[in-house]
Every structure is written in structure tokens, then in C-alpha cells.
Image (tube, rainbow, N blue to C red; front, side, top):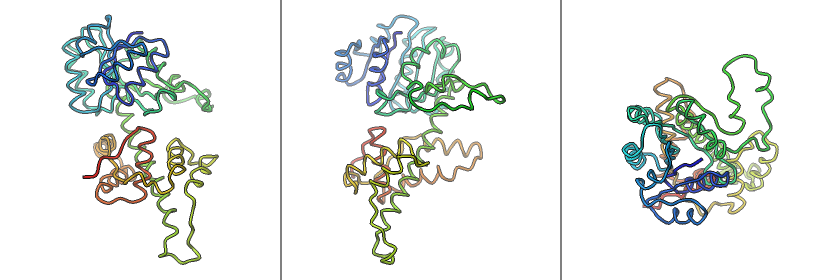
Length: 332
């Protein structure tokens, strides 16, 4: 299939590469011409403007927007709305608030332009590992673009299958695409809503690891009785936990890698940003009157980290760099 991709940063560029490897034709644009030129050398068609990108695509057009949430994404989708025609599709693969998706779809509908929101997880490793996709929008459009989504998704891989899926007798019908690493989550907004909760949970998981390693690090404190002090090797502990323990995870893999490289994480200050989804998750919990103690606390820790840093925040920073290439904000 042919697809346009706008935004060629850490994830956008690799999305293009993964699609190209699967035989799809990509027309690309970024405000910075350098990544587009690099992808053109790899076989993509680089456009010099959003208008040229739309003009280059054959109808019905599909354009994937992979930009930071906020004004730049909003402006780009408004521009696409003025350039595209009935039957065309706009996909937002960034971390947009699901309520903005609902509004945008409503605004584009009178023009006959379809809108899909695709929560995309995979970070800087997506080119090799594939991207976990949570898709919102009408079923017909999602099905038509399935070759795009299946190419980006990880596939079954080596992960053990959930046996109970085959023997399930009651409850909602199960989407067979889930085993391949992507799902149609529901109508517009559902994809980004599920991705938002995913990232909120991620905050809590990361915080649990960070606090645990901080507690172990401080067991050597001179304030403790001498016979209860332990100078623990955190890199070895992270490594042994990776192998058969119940807390095995990609986040633990990243922690083990960072600690093996530098046991003291000297390269990190512990200033931890939040990218929005954690806040939106708490807002959703408030709207639904659902207790979210752990997720709320993990968000507030990130706020506090910008004033006072601990080793736990260095662990958080190391994980964020590992999965998403997130570099700490410069000191002010």
C-alpha cells in the first residue's frame, strides 16, 4: 500500500523503514529536511511540504501523523483537513488525548475524511521489535488498512500463546489480531484511551522498580546497624531477576542494562519529565471515580523529581532513555 508519514523523529522514521521493509510505498515529510532526505536514500519519496505530500499520494490517500501531542499535531491535522478529500484517511499515531480525537473525527466527518487514532508503543526499538498498536476508529477503515498495521506490529514471535484464548466459552469475542500485537480497540478515541492507560500503568511499574532499587542501594547506609548493612550489587540483582523471576519485564531488562553500564548511574541527574498520558490517566480515573493510588503517586513523584533527586529517579531516567530515547531536560 501507499501511505504518507508526517513526522520523522525517533519513532516516525523507523515506522517508515518498517513499512518499507514490508513492501509498502512511503511518501514522507518533516519540517527538518534531513530525516526525509535520509529516508529518500533508502527508497522513500520525500516531500518538501504537507501540500506536496498530499498531492503525491494517490486517492484514496492515507496519511500517518507522528508528531508530539499538542499544537503541532493540531495544526497539521487541520492543514490535512483542508487538503484531503472524501474517502481519505488521517491517522494520528502520537500520544494525543483521546478527547481531541473525538473532536477531530467530528470536524472531519462532514468532508468525508476518516480519522483513526493509533496508540503506538515500541519506542526506539520498534524497527526491530515491531510496534504494539491500539487502534480507534470505524471497523471498515481499520480493516482496509490492515496491511499497514500488520506490517508494523511485532507478530506472534516467540511469546508463549495464551492457551485460554482458544478454549474461551463466555464473554466478549476475542480479536485474533491481539496475538499479533495489534487490536481494533473500538470507535474513535478508544485507541489513544487504551494507550493512555498503558502509559499510566507504565509509570507505576517504573516507580516500583525505581523505589525497590533505591531501597537496596541504601541498605549500606552507615545509619543502620553494622550487622544489618548489605553492600548489594544492583547490576547482578537486576540480571538475576531477569531470569525466571515473576518481575521479569522489558523495563527490568533496561534497568539491568543501565546498571551494568554504570552501577551509580552517574550520567543521570534524576530529573524525570512526564509526557502527558500519566496526567490524563489520573483525570480519567477522577471522571470515573476509580481509585488509582499507585498511578497518582507515581505521577507526583515525577513532579517532585524536578526539585529533589534520589537514586530512584536516576533509575527512572535510565529506563526512559532505554525504551524511548528520552533525554533528561537540561539543568536550569
